[in-house]
Image: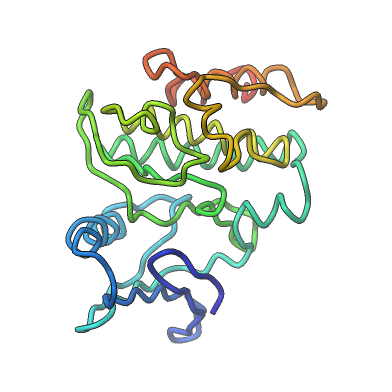
Length: 244
């Protein structure tokens, strides 16, 4: 076993002469909401999303008790492990990795799909350090200006409007999560901890006294804007001074 999440375990297997990852999701003990809503969404995303920075799914098989998702093997591990082991990334490496993440999310949004669970653990790297976004169990097809109500994702990456129980724009919520990810890449830690979620709701954030590019700091602040209507969008991010 090479990984384990809330809903499944991941193993390495071989198809022909190719090593693959197989996510095995047991149906036993799972809620009806998961089996009827979140699992079908993950399978829909697996079949619909085709992008170089999104994990490629080769096949999905189902038995009475389990679902098997066969996908490409990302041998470089996830970003949380990377910054835990290496600390903050250099400007050049952070730019390279974060741009790929944003491009993957931008592609999803163009397909009218929000991820809703973006976090360092769900960003994998292949053997050449190429980004592979994964884990689409909370993804949702949404239309422009459509609001969502479901609380999902990990609290430390969750936008304040969701934490306050408000209806929210899932695309804007993804941008907030991207801001938390970029913070983690350049500072080597997250801006909020489980016990300090009240900070998010109270709209307070402070940047560490570290030597980080000013343009990067401004980009992080624009993504971690508590008011969703004022928050940066993906085109703002890709055209920011930090990237150009």
